Length: 126
Image 1 (cartoon, one colour):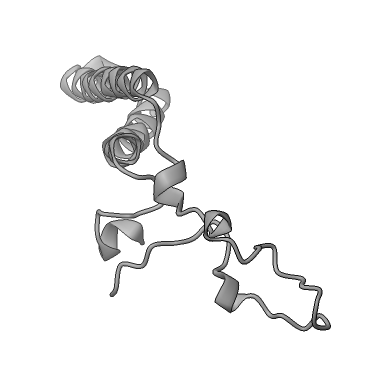
Image 2 (tube, rainbow, N blue to C red; image 1 turned 135 degrees about the vertical axis):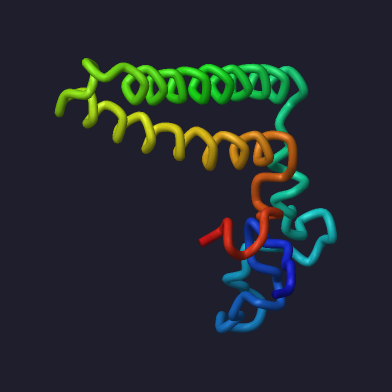
């Protein structure tokens, strides 16, 4: 697969100019200053936002992983804790652990890199 840079607006050559001569339905003038802006140039987060998101997402990852693993360990190790309600809680904990382990790193990568580009490959995209 080719990595294509997505544009916020289509290029002027991609816009259909069906208007009569002298008028144009193109959103661009003929000036070079009005050429489309790439998303990578526009979607850069400021440093304080990146640092704040990095700290928050790292905290969510650590606390979510430790908390869910502890719930699973306590209910599986203590025999008197194996009730139908607690087994349901273990299933919820497994689902939450999967969400934390899969979604938090991708959000971290999206914060630190350009969000319009997927760098984790085909299978993680699916």
